[in-house]
Image 1 (cartoon, helix red, strand yellow):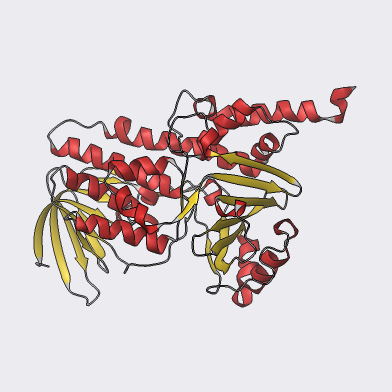
Image 2 (cartoon, rainbow, N blue to C red):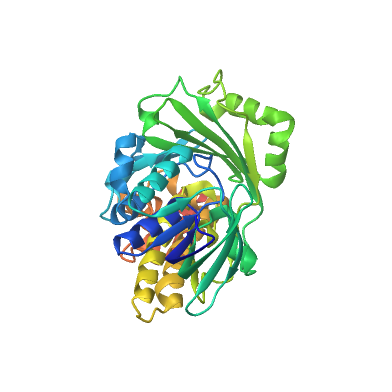
Length: 416
């Protein structure tokens, strides 16, 4: 690499947001360079995709590279609470779109996207840490170093920050802001899954417990293993992580609702945990740059929205960058931030509804209206920009209102 290079666009981060953005811009004829701090393959949480992200992979030209990998097909999601169970099948959703997606080991998935992006002619540089960024109207300067400590400078017309949890520009430009959600954490591992049924292979399974404050995910992979995680308040996760995650191991093996599925399962690696993952930003753009993926905002893993927001914002950021570089005026607030934030706000309502119990009241009702179920299913499939869906358009009030109606209807006093 030359010590001082010039390109059209620098993308920070080689995860799904960065590779979707870079691949799309390369298709438009731009010279694009990706700077990625880590070495791939690397572990990353967020293993259950949503159907909506398949559209983003397709439009950016990356879908064809993923298909031959034969990742585990995902056709729906199942929610459990004690004896209550509700399954959503993406083939029955309200919005017309993809009816399936994948469950992926992110190390393999992200590497596949990065390699496919490089094959398109994008310079993908691993183990390169961004040190400083200077932005202006026409010229952006990025200083970085490689794994050997050699320092480089790259000049670009525009920067897309897709650095995920690294949040490079939010840190450098003081753009981060706290999340409104209570501090939570997650502890997880990959386990062998010899007791998996065929039905359990095509869904993500979510078990709610502890009065909706905590939950377990089970995400099956095509190699016969399964990702199993517990999400709860910070204190619960810290306690489960003590002594090498001993309490976590015992909990998932003995948790009654899992019915012994992992009773004798061996862990593929020792449990990992993360704390306080919810975070936001003051703004998603600035002079010479735009944020995408988890560099914008991360809510909660409950509805597996992370990769979908990464690919959606990555694609839209690339489209707006293309428009900007063509000399057209871009209203970054209206055309980008408001659009991305609109989808985030929909999922924010559903995350809040999960932890207040309103979501469970609806899906575990004695009888759920099929039309309502299909409309909720489209949200769970990631189609959170479809304003024809009342569960998108009225997201901020519809869950609590419907939950109140159901509670009144199912109350013993209702029959008096």
